[in-house]
Image (tube, rainbow, N blue to C red; front, side):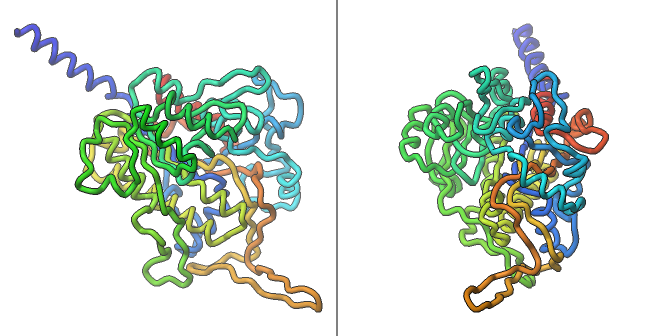
Amino acid sequence: MKKILITLFFIYILSINIYADKIKYVFLIVGDGMSVSNEVALSNFLYGRDKMLIWNKFPIQTVMTTWSIDSYNGKYSENNFDCEKGYDTNIAGAVPYPYYNSEKADGYFKDTIPADYAAASTAMATGKKVYNGALCYDKKSNKLIENIVDKINKRNEYNVALVTTDNFYNYVSAGFLSHNRTKTSYNKIAEEILSETKPEIIASQNDIYEMNNVAQSNGYYVLDYPEINKPQVFNLLNKKLFLRLKNYYVPQPIEYFSSDSFEYRNPDTKFSNIVSDVTNLLLEKKKPFFLLAEITDINKANCENDYNKMLGAVYELNETVKKIYDLINSNDTDMSFDNSIIIVVSPYSSGMLRFKNYLAKGNLPRQNIAYSKTTIVKMDTNIDYKTKDNINELTGCYCTGARSNLFKKYINGKNIIDNTDIYNVLNDIFVNE
């Protein structure tokens, strides 16, 4: 009996030490389409000056190239390529707008084929550049590419969870959780995620109704998001959860605000609360986790050239990061900045927002109406969107917490990383260490 107790004791000690030197909790927070000018716009609106968002105080602050093979200026080879041929810093700048303002750079962005979400997410999830349109798939060799979640699942040490404002089979989510030759094969992508990748928790929208049944047949407990906080819902710890987000709306900015800067149409579905609730459910499962939280509405707003909606979506991202940061720092859980890491990144830029005049705190752009004999022209005197598409502009990347210095291995002399380096850091966290 004594030998059995001693053996059990050492097994317990070993189980503790497995994660003693490892990161237990990994948060990858993604703002689809967020440009640095979007960040500046929100910071000015909230605080009247730049670089006041939560991630602006993180120890790691760098910018990232996002190009795909489609825009490579030359013959691309996976083992022998020049990053400057994918993003030419001499023309486009080594820092993004508004810190580098050049008509030549703007022309370069307009004339270059931009990376789409499939190529951008694949690069971050696999460490490999691909052509636009493919999710973790090499069109040249017609082969699937192993992504970081594949590696995590093989090791079975971490739970994986997804929270997104869009469908779970779209945008960056699809790049981390599936493999497909075409990003628009939504049914196949959804089925792969639910039946093969099988994240522990999925919180998302779902426009393919039959996927509710597919989720249930693969062991998921399906319910609408607010229901998880009702007293009658219990015993969720041993279930995989498929949470459907309904009635989610981006908050609207309030001009010249006094106390509240944004108003919510449905306060019960704040993205920050959803991510916080999912985090707490994961913690109750008593297992380390990788949580991918993605806000797609920034890209949607930029593609619509909707400044107010963009502010609301970036605000949601900032509030979400603040909530995670505060939760880690609260001492209310076993999370700390010794065992947790937050990475905030934009996989690509869209909209090409440019400022004619910087807006003061609490101010929104106003349109002046010019009349002629035949037309009425609405002209905004403060801001200008130069496109409704993606561009290969540098985007922001920020990190804090345990092993955040891993990024320093990949930041070059110009303080730039490539989007493939997101995979390199995640691989260092989950595999190499």
